[in-house]
Image (cartoon, rainbow, N blue to C red):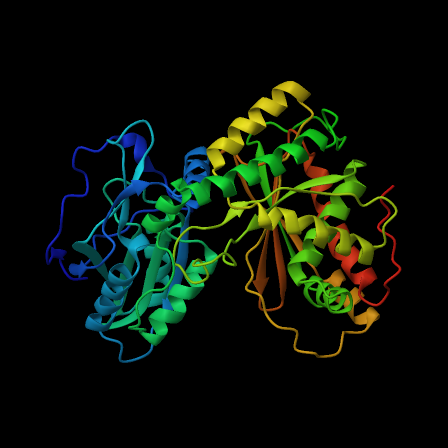
Length: 479
C-alpha cells in the first residue's frame, strides 16, 4: 500500500462541541490510512443560514434520540476505465448542485441549531489501495464499514463521505455515504438520476433555505395550524391501550429494542394483486395489512398508525434533494371489514395523514405531551410504517396462482437482525425491495411487545396478502 499523503486538507476538529458529534452505525473496525486525500473544491449558489426546516427537525430529533447520524448509501463497483478525476468530478457535481450536500449545522444562534449552506469550500475524496493480491471488494466493504461507524460532527464535517478503492492502480469501487439529514430516499433517487445524466439545468424547486422561510410565512403557519388541529382531533379520539396489549413472557434482560427481518417471498405479488383489484397503491395495501395484523394481535381497534409522508406532491418539492419526509397520523377502524374493505378504509384514512403530514414537529411534540397528560399513559401513537420502495407501475402481468403464492410464502425466511438500547418507536416497520421478495424490517420494544409475538405478526401480514390475492371476500378477522 502507498504511504499516506494528503493533497490538501482542512481541520475538521476545530473548537466544536462534542455534543454534536454523532456516532455512526454498523460494525466499525480498524482501517489503514488512505493512500491519498484529494481536496475537491466547490462553489455553489444558495448560501446562507436559516432555522431548520420541518423535515430537518423531524430527522434531527430522531438522530439525537437514536444517537446516530443515520448514513444512507453504500458501495458500487465501477466501470472499467473510470478514472480518479471522473470520481472527483462526480463529488464536485454533488456538492455544487445540491445545497443540502454542503450544509452543516450551527449551534451559536440560540437554543436551537441553524442550517448553514456554504457557498464555497473543499470536500475530501479518500483513495484506498487494495492489496495487489487481494480482493478489492473486501477492501471496499472495510472502507464502508469504517465510515458508517466513524462519528460525524454535524457542525464541522460535510454530510457526504466519498472514498475510492483502487486495485493495481485502477479505481474499482466507489463508497458513498450521506447523512440522512441531507436527503430522504426520494431525494436520493433524484440525485442518482441527475448524477447519471449530469444534468446542467438549474435545480428545480424550493431548496431548504427557501423552505425554512416559507414555513415561517403566513401561508406556512396556516398549514401548520391546520395540521395541528387535525392531529389533536385524532389524538383525543384514539383508543387507549392497556399497559401490555400483547401478553407474553417477562421482558428479556439486555437490550430493549429488537429488530427482526422477514424476507417475504410472496408478499410483493400478493399485495400487487390486491392493489390491482382495489385500485389502491401497493403502499396503501401494505399499510392496511399492517393495521389488520396489529389489530388481530392486540385486539385493539381502531388502529392508530404513523405512516411516513414523503411530501413530494406539494408545490415546488417534487425533485428537491433534501429531507422532506415526516410522520403522518391516521386512525383506521377495521371492525367487520374484509381485507379489500380494510384497504379502502386505510386509503381514506391516509388522505388526511398525507394532507396534514407537513408540520412543525416541535409543536406536534408539545401537543402529544399535553394530550397524553390529560388522557393518561394508554395513549400510544408509536406504530410507524415506512415504505422505502420506489413506486413501480403495474406491469399488467398475470397474478401467480394461489398454490404458487402459498409455496412462496412457505419459503419466506425470518431472522433477528439487531438488538440495541438506542431508543426507537415501540413498533417501526420498514419495507424494502429485494431481488426475490420484499424485506420487512420490524423494530419492536420488547418491554411492550414480547419477542415471541413478532414473527407470528409479520407472517400473519404476509399470510393475509396471500389469502386475499385471489379472494376479495377474505375477512380481516377484526371485531
